[in-house]
Image (cartoon, rainbow, N blue to C red; front, side, top):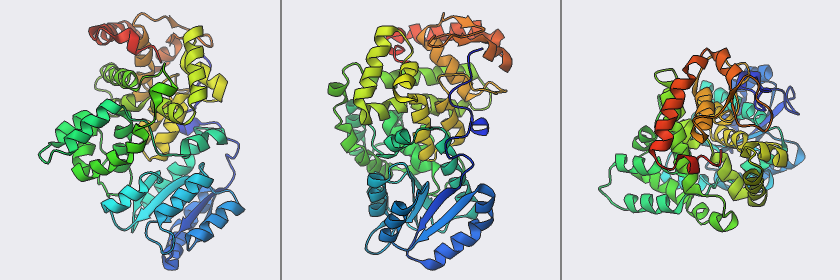
Length: 432
């Protein structure tokens, strides 16, 4: 069996540089009564979780606190005098991009959404249920262990923008301009675009709309949010759509990436069958390479070097990324989706889709994506008991430990159907 993954699962992650140290959480609200209520509600949990709760009553005081000491998470009221929540989060994004940014609001109007989408990682409705608040903060602190290098957390947190494929952007913009368009039509288009899909799921996964249950499909998310919110989301990616990714990275194609992601998602769903997590694997598969969009948009030079080196040496892209960056696009993508508050199963599957999950006991969404990616690259790829470093092969020992090694030949047949049935499987799979 190959060496353990560089990203242990949530329950087994190795300590980061600050693991075991106090996480500092800053709450900003002009109403001192609300701040006292938050302190009272979280006091016991904060002690158990090694949190230090900090408070500020306006944006300037919050910025001074950020300069004075390291803050891990900031929660900001949307409507404050002098400096609004969105304005404060913009300043935090510019000066302290590694901080997790959460907006609290008693209103769910489109204007707040439009102004805050470029800067807020998550949205929480006010008044906030104590359990929701604790869970949100637990996740916000926990996802920091996915990326161990502070400079990479700053890279990811420095912007909410992602490049969207021009073709799908134009298609959805035209559809949204039609007053009679159906949500199913919009969902079909959204499913083709990684960036817009991620933003849709960011909103429905947050507590902003008080959704009583989790949404397990893009179609369900689109139907819940409605056309007007979709318009706001599309407007939020307009600037990122203009990113000249094709000029900066001629070897990189967003369209090809999205086609391959869809194929992986479909294959992983078939491999998983009726097992638990079949719905999550479709979303995770579609978003699995969102980390490549982050690197293409925010570190094009280094990402371009990784693409070139991988193509020339025939070494898997994620191995080259790790050598150049100290991380790979799976970790980066998982961290971004964790920042945006997507469900833990999806975050973990994205973060682990390139390597076996150490200590795994069941064949789940993460395991299915790992196998699907390799089989889509080559349905006849080798399966080895020990996988050497920088080698693309299925870890047979891993499959044995999950009790599914006997299904490998069946999975190869399914992969041939998915891959060769398109007539372009090999080309689309090249950037794994």
